[in-house]
Length: 337
Image (cartoon, rainbow, N blue to C red; front, side, top):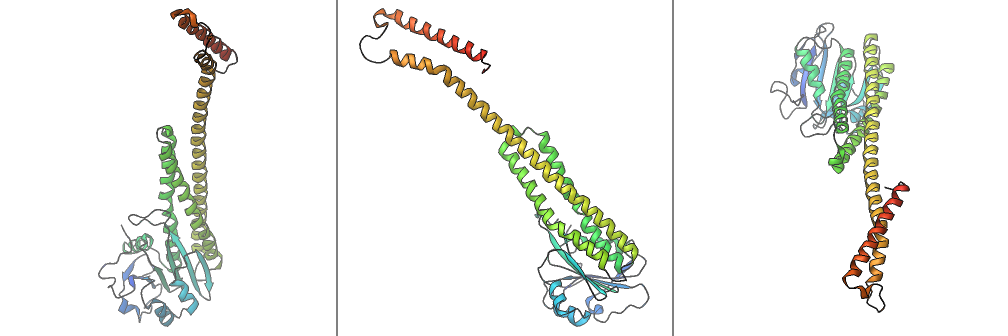
């Protein structure tokens, strides 16, 4: 499922709002339309506004500046395609760019998607360009009355879902490596090596994209404003630890793929060497015989045994057989065969 495709009640095609929720402070939320957003203010304690916007929709950057007071450089960052994970504090607001794995149909896991986040403790804005499943999962929790209760827990819920969804991709890669190890690679060496190369590329891409996320989460944990409470920092710390484990798993998968690749290549090289060795032995055995038959086959006078008629053939054949037997015995004594 593409998670943040909006319902008709959430948006229309000419609006940037993908969906909006007003958290009630108890784990639930109500829907909010774009027209109501413009004049929204909390009516009671604990209410938090969450807007999920299409960042490349015309006018979004200007709306962030005019209605939320976001400084121009920050608004430009939130709506740009600069997707490297980062996070920083700007007064009493938290600004972050995070990445998640692309589970949209036809996408590869290493095709990472970015989500921008801005929060001042009362309003939370997330922005995306391509469909990302994490925001809808959090919204579904809110609609079921089991979601985050404040701005800080909303931020941690988004980050937790982003990181948790790394697990299936890593498990799939490990399962593929186990499957390749159990197969007979010699049946389709080229195909197996191609699959291993794909796994290694996926590992490298995930590691390259997700490693900066570790630093971004550390920045959130240590630098977020006071509305990001201690329990939120503990939740982020757990997410950081889980991300670190996933990164370690990616390293293990990459090394396992490399070991398997080297093993297959070593076996292929050993098979080639055995074949070359057999060919060399055969050539060595038949070289003296070829020399004798070639020598006796020259068309000149005084060829030995030429006057023996048909007996000459059998004499030469017997001589070749004796030479062949001597060569085989010699090769066995030398343990070459």
